[in-house]
Length: 314
Image 1 (cartoon, helix red, strand yellow):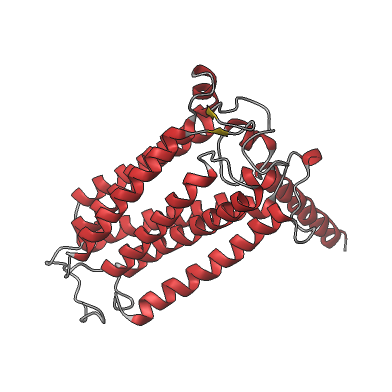
Image 2: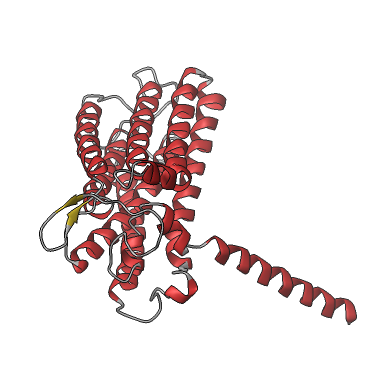
């Protein structure tokens, strides 16, 4: 009986410690103080990137105490959209490529993310409700697009015929569920429809739901994508060169996150608030997406060694 009681007590202690560890990693004021993140728009009182302390971007002064900030990120978002459209059109020409439609869905998701980033990370003089709406779409599309990227890796194993209504339908429906659920939580946090997700400045704006949906879940999807693709290339295709592209994509993405979360305050202070790490995060993420497309292109040539049935859509 004593052993049972001791085990129950030990389990409860471990559970509380795990919960404390999770909450300590959740969004806090330090995230928004040191980085320019879309989620900060729904956590702050003014629904923008200001008010968290630390270095704030100065931007270009406009009338009525308004300003246009993060212009470099805005321009890079425009370049990212143009490059993604080019890759999408190039994908259309690869008629025999496995997962062509699925890769195009990923690129479409990335384009929507970059459009939203112009208005969430780029500091346009928008109304609070409009900025919150863009933030909800932005964060919802991040988790949906990384999920679609993970499913692109699954498509490579030809469990289902690629390009068919079943394959595309499962991808779209599951992505839509993640988008709607995450978007609702983000909008509820900013617009206070309920009292469930209201940010509390006294608790350093801690938000477990947005931490899981905005940072933890996409990270898990990305790691799973890289692992599945590495197994596909090394164990099934027996190739080495595509791994260079895949590793390059992972390194570029990691560099973007390092600039955004670690180096950003030093860049902001060193440039007197002219730029911060968000500019480099946008750049390196774009380069990572390009490397992912090059990787996909390199393993989906006409001589794909895995036997597959004709796809539903040419």
